[in-house]
Amino acid sequence: MKKYVTIALGILGAALIIGYVFIGKWGAETDSKPAVTKEEQSQAKQELNKSFETATPEGEMPKYETMSEQELLDEVHGMTHQKVLADEKWGSVEITKDKVEKLYKIANSKADSEIRSMLLEILEPWTKGDFSNAVEDHNRIWDYKDGNIGEATRLLTPVEEQEYIEKMFK
Image 1 (cartoon, rainbow, N blue to C red):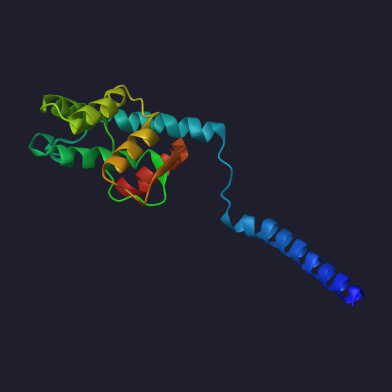
Image 2 (image 1 turned 180 degrees about the vertical axis):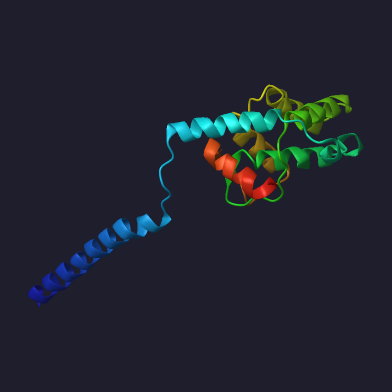
């Protein structure tokens, strides 16, 4: 009896090892993308900076002055989606310097409130092109809105962000 248990455990162990090797080796290949070089990341970052600096056409500039604070918050939340990785993203707004500066100016003109303070704290670094806190910015708005799906986990790489812009806005 002991002999049969040993044989069965040996076969089971071998099957597990073979399955792990098969899934680990061949399964990973189907999901992997080609590695992106530092040069490609650098080039994408330059393109992103150029895109940010490009003037928003007059007809495409949202009427921020007529928006409520909640609508302004939704607009900024949509902008963060360009910068962050999240399981789900509802709504997207392309980020341009013109939009960020106008949003900042409009938010600054609003009466003191929790949303106004949040908007100004988020947008002030953005006016300088600093989006390094976009994950925290996204999740701060997400928490404020009682989000339960789509928490941001990291910044997109420049290449990933460029792909997102191409998919969503071009």
